[in-house]
Length: 320
Image (cartoon, helix red, strand yellow):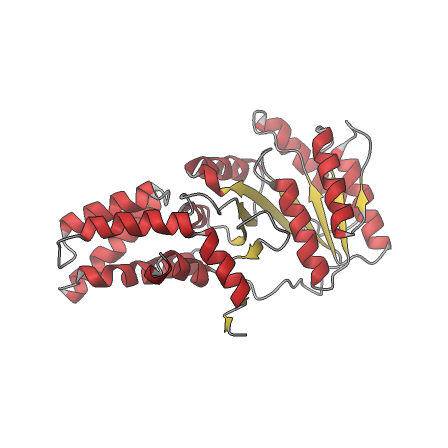
């Protein structure tokens, strides 16, 4: 089997298929923008700006990309439209690298933190609980002992769904009655995980943005209580966003960032949408690394995010 960076052939094919609609839309609009033109001039750049914005890259990030290409055109004096695709690929890859959208090496965890605690946040409906289940599966497949904590105690469906995932994956779950204190669930989860030698703990939380003060206080309480068990917990605060909502996902990210410190992102539901460009904008504007992307319903369809592979797939003309 040929390997592509950290991906195998299967993962690369899943990525290509998952980004197909975004790729078709972006490259199709790009082809129309340069049709009949031989060099990259002001008119082409104006059209390119529209292509990126309509691909949900976002206005601010789009302007950064355009400025980079303008500088390149000014330096090289003449840039043909046939080179534009490769230049875009190069500049967006550089932008992602600069903004700490680091590539993951494997499903590995720091040995110094055991258990490694991931607090998962996000509004209802973005695929948060499903993402936790898929993460649990991937960590278990890599040989880790995983614990789940059902701290979204305000929705019976959330607890039930996470319980189903725990059974499906074959990992223990800690939960309490509906309406219980989420911080109490987190405390019990960490206590049990620590006592039983767990490697990683995934804590689900309620996603209510209509009351930001309440959400901020709740997350602070959860963190404070967890630190009674593990002084450095949580090791990671993972925000889950629905990529199919485009710029709405970016707005959610900004709102969550205002109430708690987000350290990593998972962007779900990129398959079947033409809004995959939002990954570029969110990573650039928030300066928070995208760690995982969701490309399907299967347990293995949550992938480690590789910025180079993502951009390469997005601008691969052979795949459309």
